[in-house]
Image 1 (cartoon, rainbow, N blue to C red):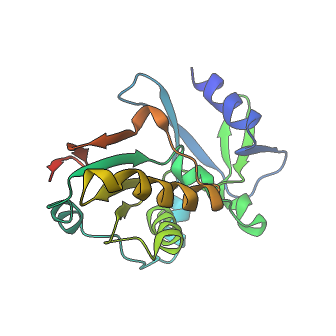
Image 2: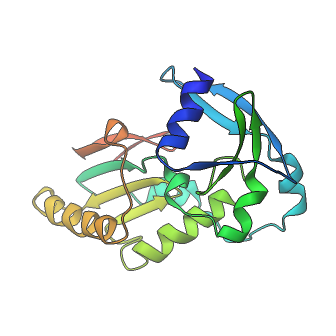
Length: 192
């Protein structure tokens, strides 16, 4: 299963092979809730060497409380969220990892880097700066669309989805729920 996942990452261009490496990390296969494998990389050494990005993550309590009074909600999840952000070419070599089938590096931001959450949140804040706390909330790759009145929800979704299209952010439709009065967000059950 691990080799299949590595080959899938290679096929979609998320990773690239390398012949000579200076900074190499080991892989850690992790079984996800859905039974699939997530390839995690032991980035402890590079994480120690990197300065901390202090971009703030939103308060989960504020996001949960911000759903009060909204009649209809849509819960959306970014598809391979971190992998939608490209790493600058000069930094790609720092993400090298070794497998029994070769040595690779990431061309996109992998899960497990110290500053991945802050980087992704910065991107979402940039994309949705005019909508956050009004018709939506964002926590890293989790998005919440909210409408005060049921009849306004399609317009709210149209606005949010147009931003997603403009910035080429993809959603994981298996994890999205549209037009509901409640659901699970960031480990909490939410409703109007």
